[in-house]
Amino acid sequence: MILTKFDIGQRVWAASTSGSPTRMVCPDCLGERVWACTLPNGEHINIECPTCNYGFDGSRGTVEGDYSYSADVHEGIVSKIAANTFDEEVNYTILESGRYFNESVVFSSEAEARACAASLASEIADRVRIQNIEHRARKRKDHPGSRVSYLRREVTNKRKEIERTLEHISNLQQQHPRMKIAEAK
Image (cartoon, rainbow, N blue to C red):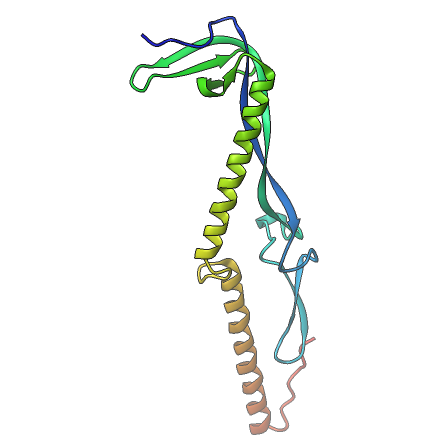
């Protein structure tokens, strides 16, 4: 038989956390939303920043940073108790929030729930921070599969194509001096 801390109909407070992404200025375009590129012929063009590009929405000038986590407390009345006999885990469904919570985060006072929620939020933030540091250490900023790498290759390929075209035009002009070639505008 599993013993529970609370009964159906009892008022309780449950600790939880919520996370939301922070927004920061794009590190590649510095919020300008475009990259200024110079072609081999000296022409200057602007292309949309691929780092802060969001598909059909275009570049925004901002990117999502790390998540910020905050402590939440849900007050309500226990409407259902579910016990797992395998690992003796007890979950409570709280009527007002419609959510269920593990017994380890359900308390009889709001102060206890707030302290637990603050501890959970801090623990999650620390764990995510460590994961991000490890992830950044493993992965080069511009790894071969990234969109930035792809666009850099495309710019390089287009530059080479422009250089070949200009060389071809120059050869044609030398072979046929009376031929007039229209200037691109």
